[in-house]
Length: 189
Image 1 (tube, rainbow, N blue to C red):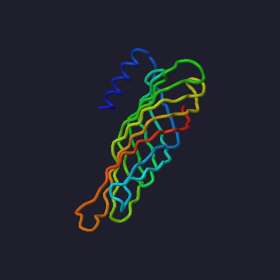
Image 2: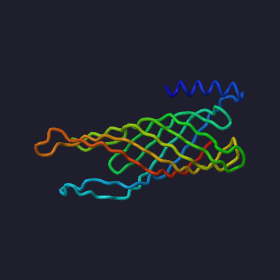
Image 3: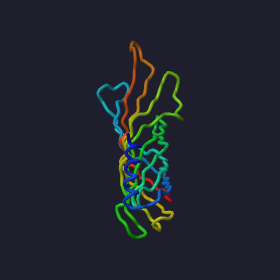
Image 4: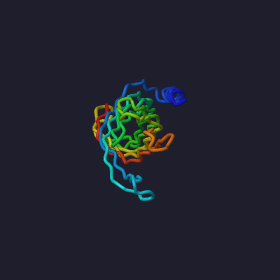
């Protein structure tokens, strides 16, 4: 559905602006910052709160639909403390400002994360889930050329973990939602 909408948008924008489709790439790495509240084993009803910093790497590959709008696919790797997730998403990049060597842009990705490279302990199973990642950034470089980027975004990532049952439990599992502030440095062309 998303791809069909992108193709429809591409054809209508191309007819309006007469811009040939051009490949674009935006690759970036950085940190995922957040606070985590979790139950402490042995102390029922008492929660522990910790700050977390996780690494993230992603690349956006797409086509320029107009001079300011690009649509494509984002693929990445997010290293959380107990999960290594690989989000694959449909994404857009839109320049909010038109002129100058420093431009403000908006970014939005929505998709699903897989646990392709995650290795679980015996009896455990990790699967990914839905992911959204809207944000804003600065692109520093000549328009139409290579640029350095700094992006600030909100990342929401779901994951499901099945665990080894304890004592007289039949099953044990946990649904996680990672809410993070993502700060990334990258390059685009």
